[in-house]
View 1 (cartoon, rainbow, N blue to C red):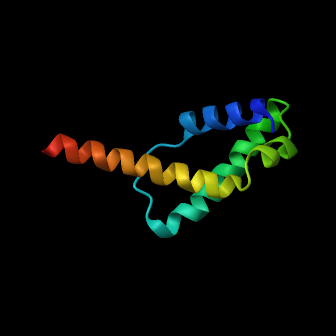
View 2 (cartoon, rainbow, N blue to C red):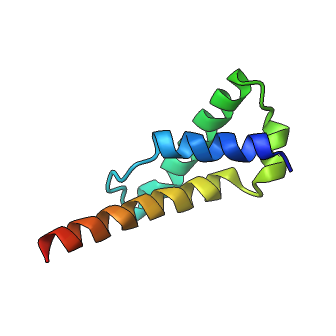
Length: 83
C-alpha cells in the first residue's frame, strides 16, 4: 500500500469535495467523475493508478462516501445553526 497515494487522495478530497447537496441518484455519477479527476491529478504528480488501486479497494465508492460525509457535515452544521 502506498502512503503517498493515500495522502494524495485524502488531500485531493479535502480540496475538491464539498457539500453541494447532491441528490442520492447523483452521488454515484459524481463520485465516478471525482475518481477520474483524482486519478488524472495523481498521474500528474507521478502517482500511478496501480498505487491508488492498491491503497483503495474502490476509489469511486470511497469518493461516494466522502460526498455523503460532506453533505452530512453540512446538514448538521445548518441544523445546529438553526437551533
